[in-house]
Amino acid sequence: MMEKFTYKYLSINTKDTNKWYVYYRIIFDNGIVEKRKEYGKKFNLSLNTISNLKERQTVASRLLGVVESFLNQGIDPKFAVDTIDQRNVEKLKQIQKTEDARISITAAIKMLRDEKGWNTPAMGKEKTAASIPAFLYNQLKPYFESIGKSEDIREVTRIDLKNFIEEKFNPADGGKGWSSSSAAIYKAWTSILFAMLVDHELVVTNPVNGIKIKSDKQKLNPIDADDSGQERFEPWTDDEVQHWFDDLDKSDDIIERNVHASSALIYYAFIRKTELLRLKCWMIDFENERITLPPAITKSERKYKSKNLIHVDMPDALVTILLKWMAFRFPNGHSDDDYVLGFTNDTKEPYKYVTFTHHFILVRKHFQKKYNGLYIKKNQYALKHNGVAKLFNVLTKTSRTPNDIQNTIRLQCRHSSFSQTETYLAKLKLEFKEQRNKINF
Image (cartoon, rainbow, N blue to C red; front, side, top):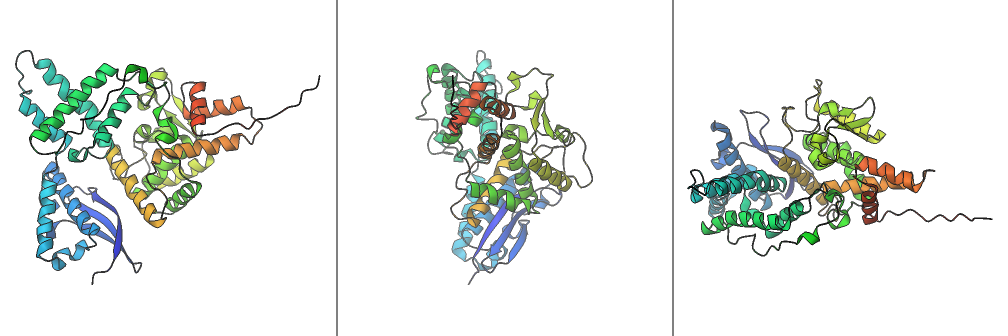
């Protein structure tokens, strides 16, 4: 009888160009933990016999899917070939067939261009042939990468596309965003892509169907969508925050260390996700205990003059965590241009958004299993709400005035206006206690 187990950290390791493998840890009920590396040979998916890295990535993704399927069935991949019966042999073939049917956003756009003849467009069709693929590459593809669905867009749902249109209609930086008419056009262009996939029987239905476009009157007030409050990102509980930071602080795993450092940057310095992955070492100013952000890497670039540098204070707890992280990440020292976060030896390459998100989800799943009932659907960026609440509560115990407190939070959050901070604090239900001062006259 096969032993029962759980697993975590399932991922593709490409650190050594000549030796790729699928990595995971398997934890048996008796407490034994084994670190596993699967090179794919036993499944006829040997990674390191393929010289073309793009083809190897395709096979690696397929191998990851095979290993994950066995793990989810309670079958130890180490002994899978020796123990599975003919039924499971057929299941393995079906898994591989399913993986072969995966279609990336890049492949789908290429298919659309070929089908529509947009590579050599007819006279009068040049603008369409250029505009639609450009939109799909430059706007839709990055969004699919951010939600982890760019490599297999069969997984894209109507809710995903509804959120995409909403984010463009009411952008996170409070900017103008798409107009209602523009949203309708871009919805139609997205529908063209998925209609083509339906025609080729690669997806069953067009997920664009049923999405309604809002009128221009329904635009939100210009507040940062990252600060849209509990409707989008529910704050963590106190227990969740404590367990998260305490456990990750003790970890020696590179992925968990990254999650620890990035969580601290969000919680203590309110650094946005889009900024996290572009942080370079020169921006972490330990001498002055602050983070220096050039406007070009922020979502609020339009608010600042191009020569301005934006400074965010680092509390002592964040300084301690980052010093520990930098020593771990750069044992032999670092240059100014090295990226702060990352899990490979190439410190000049930024952490890819989709990988960063995938790693957070892996760690969150581990915590969900360890702390039953906690961390359900919690977003990492919601830690900012917890950090703001903690800062608010600390400041209200000082002699500062409410206006001074609110202005301090505004500067640390980098809100564009005082009213934006008021709205944000109200959404978090953070209110100043009414003080009554008796007046004699």
